[in-house]
Length: 248
Ligand code: PGA
Image (cartoon, rainbow, N blue to C red; front, side):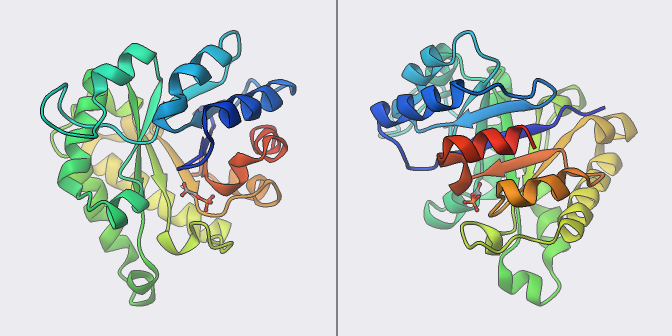
């Protein structure tokens, strides 16, 4: 049995004080302990949110990481810096980073390896654009992203990785992939992991769906065989919605 994981991706939202207000609101509610709940907050809020989450089961994640431990990389944040804060997860290769900050499959691969080296669990994002889907290339694109992201990663590390399938056309647009389409792609990704790493790794790896997930849509998505949770942007900024997503 795979533990479902609901992750809030706050993106570039919330100052430190706003972050703490949101966490305090979430903490007023009882969260289902059969679901792993996680907030991925801006770098500037990580430390304070870590303290605010003490005594709760809610996990903490960053939204990006650099692959080097230190050096002349102005403006970047290293795995050592994140490790010291004590984060559990890090989103890697989100489509917004690929699109606006020119991240490539190669840098995604390096970042995954760096995170794993420091016991930070990567949430690796993959997904096709609308144009790619319209010409029927979505599987080809996603397969290439997965294979390149996982290049050279040891089999025993696979269980620590979460994959988030996020069709780019569904992110922040209010358009969700149908639960069947999402399930089909998540199953396809599980199949790639099976081919590359075998049955057990494929059974253990958690695969989330992301893209305009809302409290109203999570229930059906979570009934699907290959969908083990969601990576949620917009709806995770509202405490009640986040609680509803976790307690779906
Ligand atoms: P959204 O974002 O829920 O606002 O569509 C999802 C994401 O980008 O991870």
